[in-house]
Image 1 (tube, helix red, strand yellow):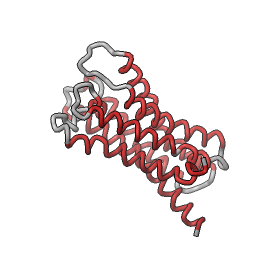
Image 2 (cartoon, one colour):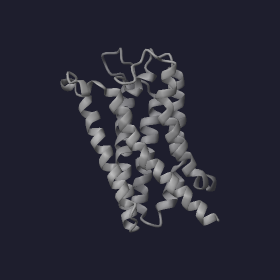
Image 3 (spheres, one colour):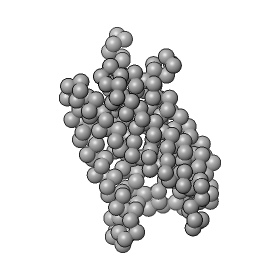
Length: 216
């Protein structure tokens, strides 16, 4: 456990980096998939040539997020047990629901009916993505309790994440597919994820710099 507390924020960065790189690295081996219009879960579709790599990669990325949880809780426990627990729940929900479940329960886009695997995948992704979105808001409250100025940065990042996520949500509506801007579903998903990664990366870098100062 001490190892996880010590290196947890490195695991958190590793989770973000591996998660972020997934569609771009695998996209090299799956040129038929249009990154601008296709959601990332299609890399794990039963007909995908990179299916196994995507499923394994998703589980590994999710494990990195889970391994970071002890360090995350330890960092904020002195501020608020409840808010620290919510921060852990948010990242844990994403790591398990949207990464590990994606790797264990893939989708079949050719099947008109949702299978059990598709149900688990979509429900897990939904819960995980909600945690992903709410994480910067939880950080805002944590740093507000600490009376830190950086709380405003997390609030700004949260608002940006919500704004882009709203466009991504609208792009998923069949009624809006006729509009050019909403046809780029894959683009909006990837952009939404980038704005979700930013507060996690900023937090990890801040905590690692803080630890470095304390050790010097």
